[in-house]
Image (cartoon, rainbow, N blue to C red; front, side, top):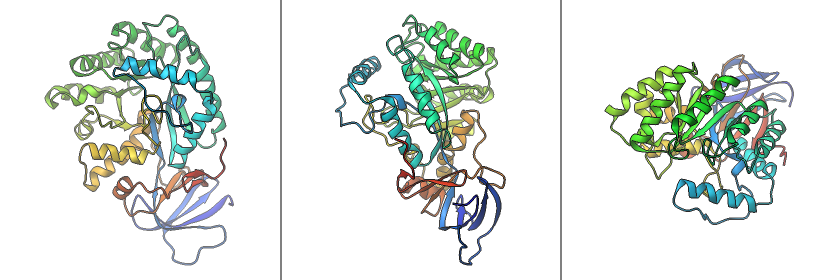
Length: 399
């Protein structure tokens, strides 16, 4: 492929057909589609839908069993059971993170995700092994994706002596965000956990991303405390609360004041749109100005054999969960898997406009709504104007 070519007869976001001139990895010109025959080097889009790349806002690539022999789920019923079972399973797996996470990462890229936030486990048993392995993996794919990390104290922070020191070491290695997990339910000391998490974020100038599974009033109380810490430490726009099931468990009249505060402080929410537990009310939160994005969470791991790394499917799950059938609502769930994810990660959303990087997807569907509903496997993925994936695979695998 040359450094300059015309991408012919494509429909940006489902609008009228256009031709895009791609030059030096960027969109250099747009014009109404020209029905003349493509010239040498041009790409005929065939009237397909042109979309910005997807954003995977929350995943755990270091835990995946992708590409490994099938393992029946063996976890017990509680969150702590799941954590202990995961440790047992990962100790038994001989395949390194580079092989497992790399295979899954290529799957995600081939489905159209080019921006990632990945949570990486640390604890006194693991040390920094997962962090070092994931940083090496990121380097291998650095020309194709943008990936940032959250140092994640999966087995506890306050309750596991030595974990805070490991988090500090991971941040010194360049990890971009400080993670937390159920300050009440896991550590039984929410103020101590939040002191450590936000203290490290301020010291190192990093963002915060806290898993919050705790439900009901206990979860709502913790969201209010996270908002307090965000405001106190001046971290507006740099904090994410992942899961936040509790926001789907109370009447809107009770949630609304919290939603207003989340909006004012620029605290984003992440949902995987799960089927088995309450989910934050997407449209009401959106109307209140709260930024809710989407993530796969665990994919084919010891927690669950489910997941395929396709953020279009995750958008469909959100629409299905709330019975969102209108085109405008389907466009909103698509935004949750693209623009909202970028904003949650402190980035500008991708744009299909002159001067922007030529990063996009081509899908054989008519509209955004159809893209979410049909989720066609036949999609082409471009990075800096270069075709990097089609037919569900990278053009050049790096495994």
